Image (tube, rainbow, N blue to C red; front, side):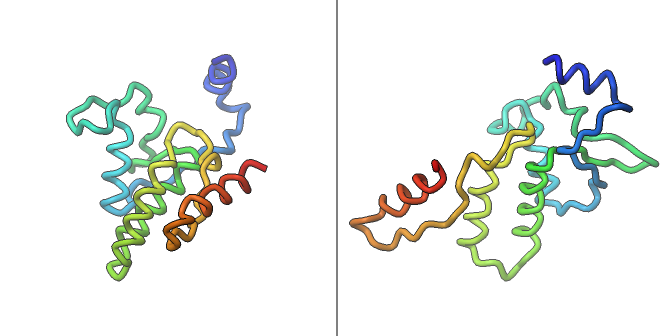
Length: 140
């Protein structure tokens, strides 16, 4: 809490290197919808009010809306933008992309706590071994 107060009170003396700014107009319709949903206080309820910290993620400059998001969240928006813009994308890839996006949050937490490495699960009797091996490798 103290660090947050310091950075908000000393905006000219602190460089926030983990936040990125860009015009909202650069996002696809799908990425825009995802961004709006992520700012709801209850993402499972489309009628939910917006989060109380929503003003941290958007601002206007020269008459245009800009987004201000953690670098880790930009990966989620970029993935949403990509999977919605490629009409030749296989449905399985889009579905996997949507699952991966659930691990990228807009609260500046690190998505590196998850492994995004696809593990071959074709051999039924040993399906769990591939996942366990990947988890063990990440734990080291």
